[in-house]
Image (cartoon, rainbow, N blue to C red; front, side, top):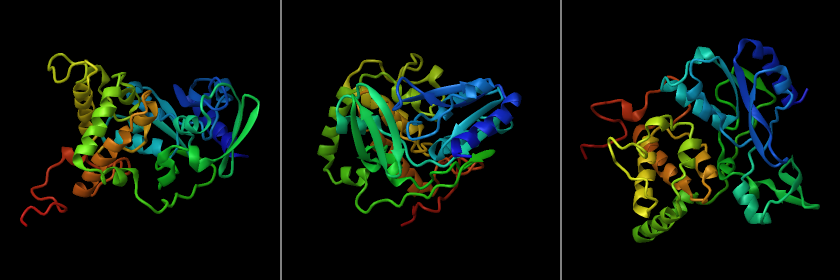
Length: 317
């Protein structure tokens, strides 16, 4: 029995005791997946697993608190679940987690840069380390590393960290290729160059809030500071300065909480490299507090705890 059939079997057995199980199904073509909310055994038949299952389903969990929910997760998705549990935003007794090992997911943004417009996809299948696509009657055979999400190239946790049911074999973590990371390359620029870069990016932002709405750790959308008028910290004008203010607030609210799922950058319709901002915040908080988000259900957020002296901060030198 393959991974998909094993997963379907586990879900069918658990479904009678649940309100629903969240997974993925094929979207309008074989290159696109969309969230699937399974309430009946017939719904389970539509479940798919593979490189097109890019969305983090954990984003829906806080709004379903109080219901008995099942959720299918890959490694990065499971980190979001762990982090939400550690913040008491989910009830573990009401959650059934179906985990599997992930071989990486497709980045439509990178794929478009390779192929141009993705008009009509007749088929898309991952074979070993390549993605085979038939588009407009033409076959395309692409190295998967060239079109996968950037997070997949350095993924150290491809398997679900937490699960009640695990389908298929464990996957081997990726060994990062030698060379500098995107953040290290960016920080080689001078401060004026970096500031000019972000000004240009923020001028392109249309303040659609897709980055916020896709973030599994951004849980206060109904009371978001970006749309609040009391207090009124930031306007809704789509100017570079106001956009930057919104993004910096978002980054600070994720300090010590970001699980590096990349959903903000994936969802951005303007292809703004928001991951750079989150990566810097994660680098600083990890170095200061020696803690990585989404790995320990019992962990206390660094910015919600207090020590008279932090082990990693040399304040007397």
